[in-house]
Image 1: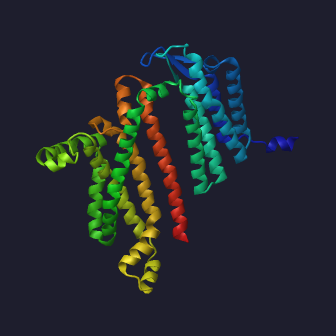
Image 2 (image 1 turned 180 degrees about the horizontal axis):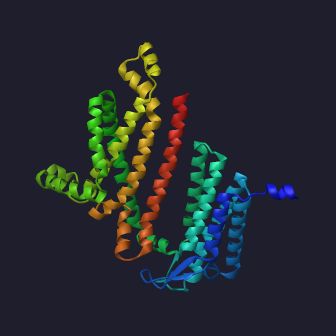
Image 3 (image 1 turned 90 degrees about the horizontal axis):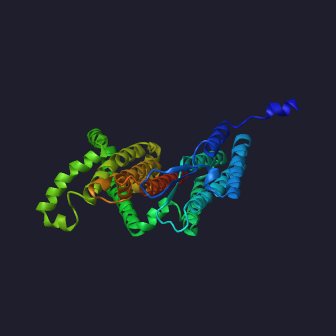
Length: 389
């Protein structure tokens, strides 16, 4: 008996997760009710936000997750517990919106409150901890991302969240939402593509010519330190002049405001990680591998394409990851100069004091950045395995 007591230990992170769940359930509101989209909200605790039977079911499920997180160490069980938490709480938020909204009232708004987000954080930490303990490979992490995406898609397509305020904001702007989504991706991916076309050759030249390397990286470092909104503003003047004096530029859509200065600014921000990582990646290629390729009679071009770039690819992809995650976030600021993207909803929501409109732009931005990081992390690991082979 004594030995069994001595062998039992609480999981430290699980204990923190259990505390977060307890705070979310008993000390923080689960939902916020507002008579319309801009007035101050009324917080509702979990037991007041749901029908009694459902409320106690969600409460029991969340407490079970807390107990399993604190006491059990097996990664598969902890992952299953997190899945139980998400499956219980996420649909319940949609039920809270239906329960709290008066029948026939189209003006009332119900939003997730601090308690709901705290539960999502706790379950997310439990998922991250479980996946770390499972030591999933790149394909396993991609599969986990796919399962999470499918779960969110199921909630959205099933209509379980259709009464939530953020979904009502989306319904009123569904056409413009997808247009701005396309613009956001165009800014992020377009600037990344241009940076790859310019940055890879520049990085190669900097690797081959050390005298060029120092000056180039110093200039790009200076560009990187300029605040984004300041760089957007600086670029408005020359691009506006170019559009006024060159009819072809104006015909191509280049103007002082809009997507053009945003695209150029994001391109400039993208150059340093691409160039620097290309230099570092090529510098880490073993000299013995290059000498062996030369001894096999490969030309300089063949050595570059068949030996050096493949071996440098993981480091170059790390730079691409930095750029893509960075640009997906910075593209939000482009809305301030008419560049479009999800930032349009963020700044409209700030102007209207409509937090759900802000979230309509912020949540997809965060989701895209997170998905891009997971996918590129997996690609880097796969490239590392390939280069080592």
